[in-house]
Image (cartoon, rainbow over all chains, first blue to last red; front, side):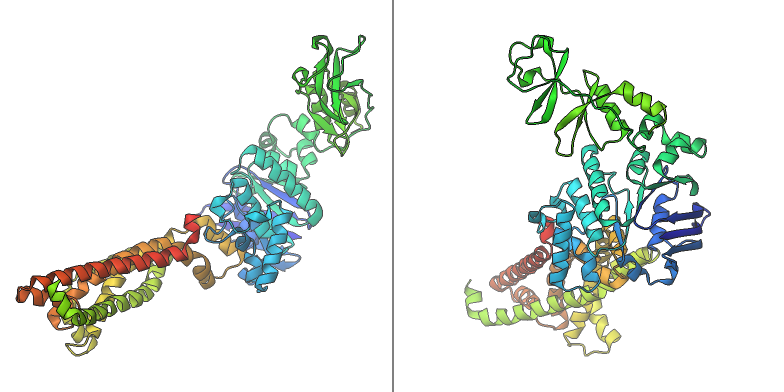
Length: 357
Length: 210
């Protein structure tokens, strides 16, 4: 557990970056610090590993004040990931990842073995080990940054806008991989971002800071969306709060409807419904408008507009699957990606309205 | 070529002397410039003072510096140490800025990451800052090396033997072969220094070509 106890950071000249921050960061969970630029989120993060010293107040890790610990020793026990990865350009990927183990005095072989292991766990192929950072894509560099932060298996991970410099597709991959890793590792993660959606997606709890370094609200994502503390938080959360809140509520028990399906190469029956789902080897491929099909169905007949939700998906994804389907019937699949049935938006809406979520 | 064929041995001796007088100050100068350049980067106020002062040293005429050295160091007039010391001054004059700018070229996020990983000051300097400063440092060293080879030849005027002797003697006695040999030898030596330093720089920075 990391605790901020009435922490203030004031710079000479009177600029207050963080103002009386009190915050508890629970062990084994992701706490997102979010806010506009100038809200002191990065300053707060950097005070944890003493890259910045607070002017007043106390920061402690598991009851021990960080100010009492040797800074370098403290930092070796805390993983750190920054925006542009901050990799050492003169070291190979493997040597970058092995940095902290080497600093901790592990021998070369053990350090490299740990580095290889972590490269694999963050999804980096082994043949990148001898490359230099400049030879990697932005996404790969960021993965190296994460592997380097984790290499000595620290209990705490500080992440300072780690995914904000990569393109949206890669960002999404990195976000879901972070969640996958966290499900295995249970690190205490402090994640700084200016993107409220990223904070809501990743954080077990979200701390919203306002300009001047004042904590506006700290809450679980669903509670934040359901009960913003003031106008600032409500504005910062932005539009579509009702829809976005559906990401964080439990999925009600929804009736699954069977569906008449077609395989490629089949001819729709004479009494076919307007839209039929094409399924190949159990996997849904898309919908066809039966009236428009000449003879056997081929891939050119497919309408791919519908999204697919898994059985474990949130109401938001299930609702989106239903609304994006040209048949207005949302396609649900199991863990193996095989079609299990369809759902109706109206039925989901009724359940949500009744508060069964 | 006629002159060289009968004086090959002498030229070789002078060449070795020249190498020694130019190379030793280069090494000592680098070792002196490293902490000075680091200090210029470390304290904002120190940068203009250190870089300007050391740069001014370069404007002192070499002959004057050679003559002053015995007074400053208390050495004998003909001692080659005078030349080594004076050349070290010139090397430092050129390299303080290179060291400071080379260290300044280390990206801020890399520096921050190194600190956050748990590097302490001096170890970070050796493991992260200095290796990344090598390209800028190499460029400065190449200039200093060529400059040293050129300036050392003036030492003939105070009686310290090296390739410059071929120039003064060839000129005084109007021996064209000797004069040309001196010029060509200095030129080749400067090229050799440049080539060696570039080679070392490349060997230390495989990452810049990746």
